[in-house]
Length: 115
Image (cartoon, rainbow, N blue to C red):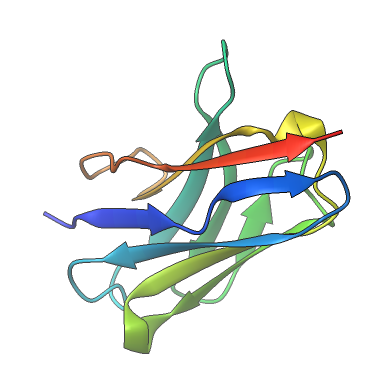
């Protein structure tokens, strides 16, 4: 099993930026799809972005143009650069692998965007 640890969250004003990290316990170079999710208060977990081993990326419409997912295979880490943050981006952010989540969920990292 791949264990994932998210970090980098915090409190930021609207319009600000954060970079989240997802550190894997094993190599991610052979993992086809790495995904960032989020769960906002009172809502279900939703996919935010995913990255393929072939270099493709896809984003939820709500974050397109503001967020960027990347992976550093040498560090076994996936990043989520979040710019132009909005209060509605407030959520706990999680990472996992596979379009259907394959691994155990980590503790996530809390992002709070103040207006």
